[in-house]
Every structure is written in C-alpha cells, then in structure tokens.
Image (cartoon, rainbow, N blue to C red; front, top):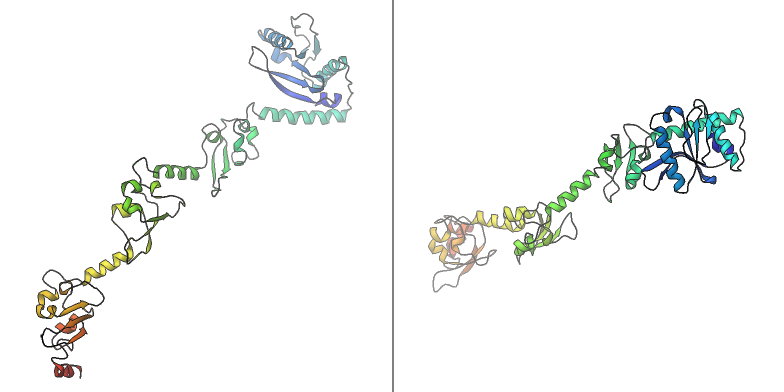
Length: 382
C-alpha cells in the first residue's frame, strides 16, 4: 500500500504466473501501469544454501518469457549471477518504509513519478496493507468458492467460524456451515461440513431421499402394473402425489396412494388405495365390499334357507323385491326383505307382498293367501 499511495500505480500482491516449463510461480508485486514484476528478497527467506539457485532460475524463466522483472535483495545477499540484471538493495531488516523506498527508486528510474509520504499517509497505508496482508494469509490459493461457485447461492453462514465465507475457506475445510436448498418446493435448511459439499458433492438430503425413493419405485421393463396386471391398471385414475404418472410408472407392490374407479356397471364409485393393497391383499371398491358383506350376512347357511325349512312357502315365492334373481334358497326364514308371493291353489289368483318372517312366524298376518283365508287375515289384523 505504501507503493500504491506514493506512485498512484495499481499494485497486485502475491501475483501468480505459470511460466514455460515451470509450475506456478508467485511474484511479490505486480505494478500494473508499468507491467512490472518485483520480487522482494529478505535475508530470512533468501539466505539458504539453495535460495540463490532457486531465485536465479525463476528470474531467468521470467526474463526468457519476455516479462519485466526487478529484484530487490536485502543488503548483504549476493547478487544474482545473471549478466545485465540490475542489483537493488534494501534493509537490513524488514522495515516496510525502507523497502518501499527501494521500490520507489526502481519506479523513478522507469520515468514514473514518486511522492514522498508524510507520517499520516504512511500510517494509513501501513494499516491498509496490514489488513490486506491478513486477508491474503486467510484466503486460500484455491477457495471453496473457486472450486464450487454454484454453492454460493445455497450458503447461509459459517457456524464454526461466523463471518468466514466461501472465498476464505479451502475446499477441504472442516468448518460446519448452514445451507438452504433452492430446489422448487423444498427450502430445506441443514448443517454439514464444507468439504462434504465441495469435495464429496453431497446436496440436500430431503431432495436426495425423494430422488432415491422415486428411482426405487419406478419399474423396470416388464415390471410395471400395466404390464403385470392390465385389468387392474385399467381401473387406475391417477397417482395422487405424482400427477402425470400412469400404470406404466407403478410397481404392482407400490405404496403410493392412487385413485381408482370401480369397474362394476351398477357402481362406478371412486376410492383411494395403494397398489400393494390391491395386488397383495385383494382390496377393491369399498362400496361393493360393504354390499357383499351385507348380502353375506343376510344369506342363509346350508340347510337353513326358506326353501329348506319351509318348502311349501318357498314354492309360492315370485320375487325378492330389492334383489331380483334371488330365490327361496337365498332367504332366511326370518328375513325382513319384502317379497311377492303367489297362492299355490290352482283356482286362486291371489298375490300379495310380505316378508319371509311374516310368512313363517306362527300367527303372522301375511302367512297365507288373503283371498283363500280372508277371515283369518281379518282376525290377525284386528
């Protein structure tokens, strides 16, 4: 920041370049307006036995690639053994004003103006430099945001280190973060370590369960309800929670609730049921089931029908009014179902309505033909 404040030149710190034949190199400063790279070589990091060879190789690679590079080395370090390269010195030590003055000498030599800063300007520049340097130390070379930019919209906050964003965490960071799913109709929020999302690629668990459930519930070739049981599939109206699904999308043992239509001509009612209940338990229309249950309760056991117990009365039965097609074998003697009867006497045209119970109970009014036995009927009704 001292260099930027004194020269007015935009400065990149820790500028990265990949030179031919080398892995990525870091240069301390890039003065943008001058397209000038500057490396600062303090003794504490550049006085090792291999440092001179390493600095020389890096400098030769940059110059061979046509880059403009100057090195400022701490006083006492040997110059680089490169013919024609200038040797600039600063220090000893790491006083930032001393090193900035050395940079200023390089800038002025290239014809760019340099301003001497007063104490207030120096303090301001050093404070800003300290802040930027701290951010540079905290910010990884490759951040989670660089590795997975699509996660930025789902990121809520860092629960382990509040305020630390994706741009300040490496992809493998263990910080637990909060996330919000943006999938339509979801909005689920959950917490998980950053590396689980960036490196493992895991997302919203709720959506994952839905996708897995949907995938597991889809039939393979020849396994669908439509293929296995086309008669049952013809009764399907819709799959309640999956609009657009058909019998081709359902397994016969699926637990998804569906709407069905009864195929019986005298019914046609709609009802809800799972395919597994229909195929595994044989369930069907509840209205028809109730009718069958009621009919079953009213039907006589073997040997207990009106025909079996009272064959003469059973022979006079014309019809069961509410159940066309029933006969005396379908009625209990105590049944309360209204019936039509015809007198068994050949010369009698008498016909009347009564229940089997009225005809079979001793002394009942509807027991005999009202034409053949008028007086008895009158006495029974008085």
